[in-house]
Length: 349
Ligand code: ADP
Ligand code: TRP
Image 1 (cartoon, rainbow, N blue to C red):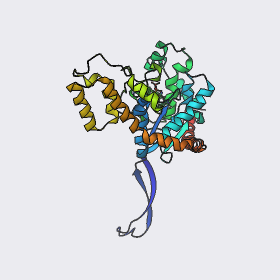
Image 2: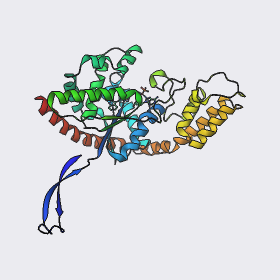
Image 3: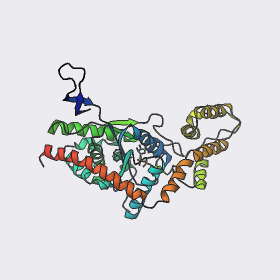
Image 4: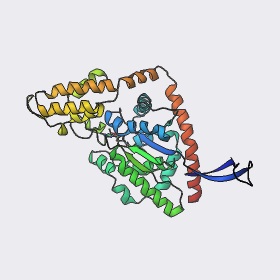
């Protein structure tokens, strides 16, 4: 909510009739929506349903800021060519999936370097224990990644990303929820130390598709090698779908849809009637998993057809992505400067 000064005519008032006066009006300001995605690899359908689709659906409901988290990707990717190429590809895929630059600012995180300044300031109030409890850090170390200071302080940079735009809502997959909670904790800590300078954001987790399963039934993730790429070739996508792990239930026997990744993935693309039909087919028996996989592939391939078309159109306009990113960065910078001025002043810089 924001205060606005308004000028109104008040014809009905006996003394003020016809004259103007100033009044304050409590007007709702647009909800500010922010999310980011790392350009650390090729996007997959887990990223699409967990983060991109909810973010795109929200773009018409407020002022949206979506960015390519290239500073964050540096914690795991040390190949400059790959980082640059992935960043461009994330922008392309996001636009192909329906991000509308007229509604949402799309930009590279590194085009708003003020976030690293805010991250530093947040680091000075961040308790070590808070970072030590972060699941994503523990998971990455368990998977053998080098324990760099950047990986450890990843959550403070993410908090800066969110807080620097006075964000209200952060659409992310469930695995990012703890990071948004850490962001809230840090905003509270800053506000207790320096006065009310930072806005507390809310995570928005899409419950319909909280965790998209991968080919092996675990969470789909590029680090598990179990993904179906969003814009893979037809042959590769079909190959991936046909390699979904199944149990050894014979063709004629009834099957449990609720433990099947085929059924769970199909449910993301199909209509309620189609989902009910596949459920009944599973439970009835008489159809093999190979058959269900073909049905899933056909549905999935159809679902992304308009987005593949849009992607080709964007690729045919060489300057389009750069223009969108430059325009998004200008918008993001304007907001980040306002918040940073407030923060710098409050902390004594
Ligand atoms: P990955 O696990 O492949 O490395 P990221 O961690 O880069 O994916 O995730 C980017 C965004 O996509 C995050 O918001 C995350 O929550 C979401 N996401 C990733 N995988 C899934 C999944 N299997 N199901 C739902 N959301 C996902
Ligand atoms: N950590 C997020 C991920 O791995 C990416 C990210 C960085 C992000 N900064 C953010 C997401 C701010 C939402 C808001 O997916």
